[in-house]
Image (tube, rainbow, N blue to C red; front, side, top):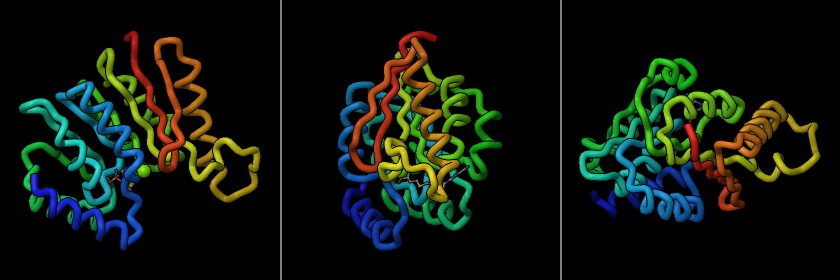
Length: 197
Ligand code: SAH
Ligand code: MG
């Protein structure tokens, strides 16, 4: 893994306002991955591949990340980035809308990282729960959405996203088989451990 190249990719993404995982969020995810040592990770929302490349360092020998992205330009850039960093044997990109791709997948994953359209989080959760291994972890980035989710202000134009993020939180906190923690790192991170299947 070419760390120098990864750092360049990160800088470029930040300069171009691509919403890559924030440093404090990544720190928390790193710790979780170190503990789990996953064999299989599913990511929803690749962007230019930054988070997937960071996560790939914690895979077991022979492990693999599947990541889904619908934006063609970002897919093209992610492919180049992944090659330049030297992790192309660890990351597989599914090209297209996750809403269409997820139902076609029939894998089992140790970790699912949800980081795409906020209005679709409840659907992504349903699909993640279908494929997560027992003792696996489902992570949802941007779960607090600039604080909108925990405020009672309901009139902004992002209200569909906010409603769906709240529904996600309700589901992961009320399900007795899931242990959930919500951290105020970055834009908010929900960490859900699946204790029963
Ligand atoms: N995980 C990345 C950042 C992802 S940004 C990182 O931390 O480096 C969110 C990405 O999700 C965007 O590139 C957007 O195009 C993609 N996306 C949003 N909704 C999607 C959907 N329904 N299907 C596939 N990709 C989606
Ligand atoms: Mg994010």
